[in-house]
Length: 283
Image 1: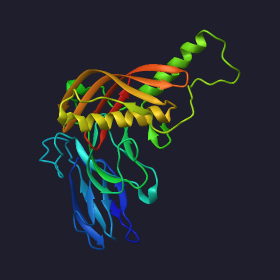
Image 2: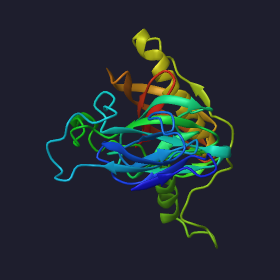
Image 3: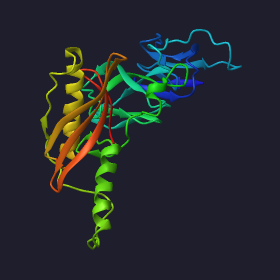
Image 4: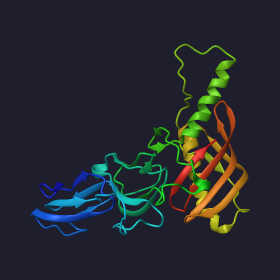
C-alpha cells in the first residue's frame, strides 16, 4: 500500500500489519525508518514529507519471525496515540482490557484524566501524546486478571467515572423509588451536584511501606470520582486483599462514601503504580 505525508504532516494509514512492514519504494521525500516512517500492529505512519510504498503482514499467517518492534514485556503490541491541539483522539485497537502507558511523548498523561481505554480502543485528550502497550502476547490474560478490565463509565468533569460507581448510585435511587412514587420528569440516573474531590480519610500505616504510594494513588483517584459524582467524604474501612505485580500493586478494600442522602458502603478494586491508575472499579 501507499502511505504519503503531504505538506510535511504526519499521516496514519490504517492496516493490520501483523507487526511486519517493509519499505518497498520511495515515491518522494526522505524516508528514514523510525524518523520519517514507522508502524504499529494497526497502522503505518509517515511524516516529514515521506511518500512511499510499503509491504506488510504475512501471506500465510503463520511461521512469524520475531515481530518488529518487539512486544514490551508480554504485551500483544505497542502503539502511539496522540492528542493534537488538545483534542480528544480515539485509537482503535483490541486491548483485551489491558493497556499500560509505556512511554510519554508529550503533555500530561494521567490515567483517567488525559488517557484511558475500553476493550476496543485507547483514548487520549488534552495534549497527551504517548506510546501504549496493549493486550496479551498469548491473547489470554492471566487468570487472576481475567474479565477485570477497567470500567467504561461516563466522562464527568474531565474524569472517567467507573461504571461500577455509576451503577451503585443508580441502584440506590431505584431502591428508593421502589418505595415511593417517582417525581414527575425524574430520570433513571442518580444525580448530585458535582464537587471537588471528596475529603479522604485513610490510615495506610498498617500496609507494607512499598505499597503505600500506589495505594495512596488509588485512594486519591477514588476520592476524585466520589467528589465528581457529588460525594463529600470517603473513608477507608477495611483491607480485603493486597498483592504486588506488574510493576504496581492491586488492592481490594471496603470504603464508605458519604453523599447528600446518606452514606454508601462501596468495595473498591484498584491496580496502580505510584504515578498511574491502571484500573479502578467499584462494586
